[in-house]
Amino acid sequence: MSVEPIIEAHDVTIAYGDRRVVNTATLSIAGGERVALVGPNGAGKSSLLRAMTGVLRPTSGEIRLCGAPIATVHRAVVARTIAVVPELVQLPFEMPVHEVVALGRLPHEPPFTGLRPADHVAVTGAMERVGIAHLAQRDVRELSMGERQLVFIAVAVAQSAPILVLDEPTAHLDIRHQVDVMELLSDLNRRDGTTVVAVLHDLALAAHFFPRIAVMSEGRIVADGPPSATLGADRIRSVFGVDPALVRLPVGAA
Image 1 (tube, one colour):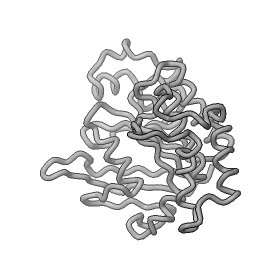
Image 2 (image 1 turned 60 degrees about the horizontal axis):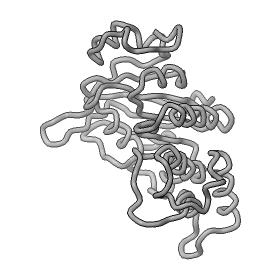
Image 3 (image 1 turned 135 degrees about the vertical axis):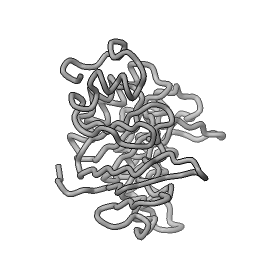
Image 4 (image 1 turned 90 degrees about the vertical axis):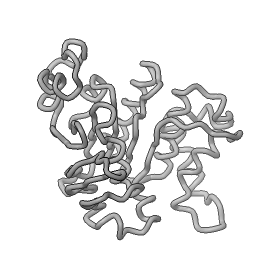
């Protein structure tokens, strides 16, 4: 794992009108880290994530990608550096899985020439890596939500970006598919060195699969570190407003 930051937020504030959703947040992530961003609804997690991927311009503060202000980095370079898996989306038209996964190669394609042999290899490899090669010819709309989520992760894998960013990758999934997705992210991080940043609601999944957790509350990052330091009983009670006994964390996490 690199000790140099690959993506950073410095004193980032994001406001919609008079309403601040992120308030002077600072988060520095080194290459090869696996970081979960957790917090209650409305804490500002998704807004901060969108700013860190260059989709949303902060009201103040700065996002840096590989040391450069992300606002100065060409969009094509950002697309080749950060792969984003959004919350589960619906496709309004028929599209086979392999064509959806091929969308991940768009940042690498020369204009007007379409997929090259190397792109086809990347698409096939991504489907195999994610375990959906047997679904290649299926219409994405016919898949289960768990299978569909794996397809969109395969899109990001095909993109071959060093940073993988996910917003609620396990939302609406059953427990088996939740674990499948988390194990896949861990594998991509450990074997490929992919930097993984994910917004999660499930504290148990976050504590089990992510060695570093940043906790957001009311637009601020109030804790950042290993689960044992960030998800203690007092913090769960103060940030999430629930009895810590109702949250099952791995032994030693709290």
